[in-house]
Length: 155
Ligand code: FES
Image 1: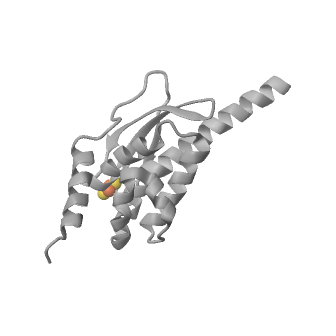
Image 2: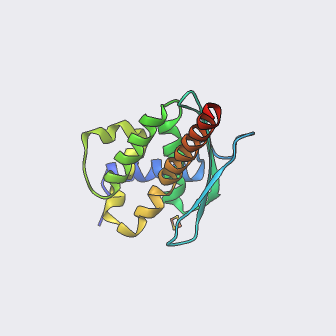
């Protein structure tokens, strides 16, 4: 079956993100969070610099397939400069989208919206959500650290 021009365009953008990922690397002074895809063992290492509840900088590295690498690149583009609440909302929208739940809000994802087609390939859902799940864990870890520091100040 021939691909439509739109499908071809989407595939080209995904391939570009995979071959030349944005925000690839690590951040000085930021402890990276590692998360693996249990179905294949691939790993993402995600560094998120959060200041005043805002994602000031973000970078990733690791081993992953085309979909996970493209999703990581698109995720970093989507959440950089956002508040942590906005980033968590985007992670939720993305998760629902790749499970086939359409939502007008998915246009907030930027180019990550192009991964909506993953819903047709259930075995790739974990590839696409790997960086978004790492983002959620990184934000949760940061919030737990802040809460712990706040409690120490009160004591
Ligand atoms: Fe491992 Fe996609 S096959 S992350």
